[in-house]
Image (cartoon, rainbow, N blue to C red; front, side, top):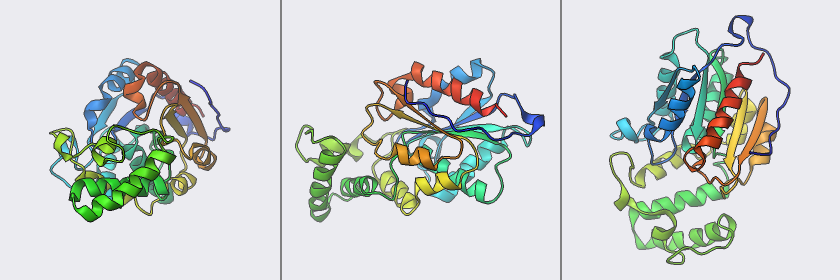
Length: 278
């Protein structure tokens, strides 16, 4: 691990200082709560109550369509499940991280952060309002529709994606969409099709993760894999974060918790300890 920076801490009510926060884990796109089993075992062994949720259109909620309103309800219910006096840390990966940042900003605006110890935002350091995510939405739309027009739009998007995000490297099949992002044929009970991508990114459209970080009033740790090509704006995100920290995990890609679980668990330990400090 490297590239760690912490800003000066604020204050925590005296009655809550030093308590081990409960932990809520929020998965990324087209996965489910199942991805967090290693982390659930790890934090529970260290005295934290913990649970992993399924976002709408995923896992146990796979029959629902994704919406931010419903995602907020899932997070509200998860935090409330630990009781009114329990402080809770939320760990979100990719879509789960963007959703968590938006939810935390909303709570901060409403003055409802008293039960939040902090946020660990993983693999979400490219603003959804930016070009990479917009083009990713174009690719996903083409995968869903399968139309000739959508596929023509996807060729240009895929070329930009390969040049800007993949560093110019080719994938098998050239600009072929299937080679870049897969397709709906690999959907399953815990791996929904690409239609969920268009839903989720449509709900994120216009929601700036940088603006959400500026609005948030709880500590935020940004965690990225060193090999993640979507670390496009991590410094900008760090500068916007309230009591922020940035940790880059060597050798890991976008899915840091599964690419480097032991290193990621050590980061979690450090973050959760920091969230307990006054």
